[in-house]
Each structure stands twice: as C-alpha cells, then as structure tokens.
Length: 405
Ligand SMILES: [Zn+2]
Image (cartoon, rainbow, N blue to C red; front, side, top):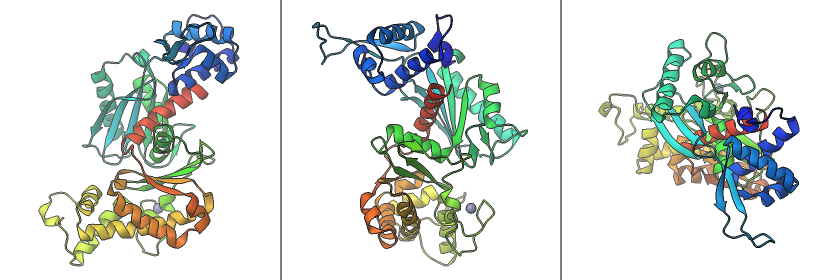
C-alpha cells in the first residue's frame, strides 16, 4: 500500500529513490518543512529533492501547506511549506486488554482522530473471542466510513508474549496455530503489525509523550499486570524474539502466590492490579475496614475502584498502594543499577494513583538503589495515560511501513 502510494505515476522505482521518498515522509510526519530544509536535512540536492517532493504531491501522500511565514529565501520569496496528507490516509490503532478493547483512527501525523472504548469485552484464547474482536474493529472502521484503500495499516497492542516479526500472539487469540496478524489481514486487507501492549505504550511515550527528548528510559506499565519497556540509546529493546521486559514475572516474593505464568512468587503477584485485588480481599477477610464493602457490590471489586478509593483517602486502599509502591521501588532499584536510565515513566491504569504511588516508589528506590544512578534518574508519571497504547500502535505502523514496508 505505502509503496504503491510512494511510487504512483512512475514506471520503475529504484530502491534508493523509494528510500529517499520514505525518508522525506518520515521527516514530515514530525515536522512540516520547506524544500531547502528537507534537502538540507536529508542531504539531497535541491533539484533531486524538488522532483521527489513533486512526485509525492502527485501521489497524494504530501500536501502543500502554503507559504512559510517566518522564512525568506535569498531571492526574497517566502518558501512553500510541505506536510503529510492528514485528511485522506489513516491508521487503525487497536489496544486489546483483558477486559476492554480500545480502537483509534489516527491520521498520518499519528494524531488521534477518533477513539472508542469497549468495556464489555473478555479476552480469551478462543475462536469466538477472535470473531468478536474482529467484529468490534470492523464496526468501528465502518462507522468512520473509511475506504480500505485509504488505510495505511493496523497496529495492534495485546497483553502477553508477542513476536512482532511473525505477528504471533502466543497467550491470546492464537487460533488454528496461525499468527494474529494473519487473521486480521484476512479480515481487513491491510498491513497488520502486532506487538506486546507494554512495548507499544513505550513507543507511544517515546514519540508523543514524556519520553520524546529522552535517549535512555524505562516505561513501567502498571495495569492489571506489570510490564516494562526499555528504550536504550533511542531504540526499543525487544530482545532476541521480542519477549524482553517481562518484569512482572521476575521472582521477587516468597509469598507462595501462584502467578498466571504458573510459577510462584513473581513480582506481579503483588505488584499489579490483579495483586491489588487479591490483597484487598485478604485484608477485608482479616476484618480491616474500607469504604469499599464487598457486600455493597454485585461484581468483585476491581483495582480501578481500589485506586480511586485510595485517591479519596480510604486508609486500607492507601496502604495497599503504599506497600505496592514500596515493593515496586525496591524492584526498580535493580533496574536503575543495571541500566542507569535518565527517567522512569510510570504509566498504565494504576499510575492514576499519582503521588501516593510515586512517593512510595521513591522510598523503595532510596532504600535500595545506588545513590549515583538514582540521582541521574527522574521518576515521572505519564501524561498520555490510556492514549499511550493507541498512539504507540500508530507509531508502530508508521515505523514498519516506512522502515521495512
Ligand atoms: Zn509470573
């Protein structure tokens, strides 16, 4: 799709020419530029740059945005400004969580045009669940009325072990022994890239969030589970097969609690939304009081409610967050000692606990991290929140089609 757009109107595209066009589009996704700026940045001669840009304009992937206000060329004319076409081409971002699914339509600048959240969703490894997921996404695309030819690709973030190279999601929606990307490609007829949810959120933070200016940082996804994304020298560290960052499954507690991975004592058995819920019920059984009385609720109390009650000052819930934060700080001390990052960005739904969580993490870090790398590392709370995964999904598609597509 992208190659067709980049090569429209031409008989044969040389690889070098295609690469130059991709580099121009990549540059213009983040910044609108004039021809002299584009040529200077990409070290192209002005005649070559002008020709390539004209072809991209003819292909409809770039737009002429008018004259630039604050620059005058040596001839005294104001140069024209060029940018990507944000009106005709779109990316679908999908964030599949255990109990909800979020879908976004993003434009070519990776800006959210529309976002929808479905909370009546239960992720399972079944054919029925795959069909439901496909129907939800298809309805959303239909509602936005996009022609299939105008979809550049689909980025999918999903919990569990994912191999981006093959599009396999091994824990969920792994049906008929085929990659999830295969099933989605069959249904949506566009390029599909599948990645682990934490990895995709880390990309979102790096491209549009607090990680934009950072070369080395870690992103903590504290939601129902616990994951870690590592940006090292500006690049997402995926490991050999894409399974890096399974922080929640490092052994940490001698608590005899069984983790979903089948082992006992994993960090995520207590430091996660799931762990929060377990500990809350244990405290209530021991007779501790909370404004959240299970007898008042038809459904089991979830970690969102515990986080909100802590924010409102409920002592039992605050203690849960404080203990979790201290243990998270203690475990992150090892990450700081190991990687010397310039920041830890706290994200995921539990990060909404804000200062209560941050202060407890800092007290764990101060106790267990080496002072010098700790001094270099700021602890910050994500401002993108739930949007991180959808923006990251869009970025994944742009990266893949412009680097490898
Ligand atoms: Zn585990």
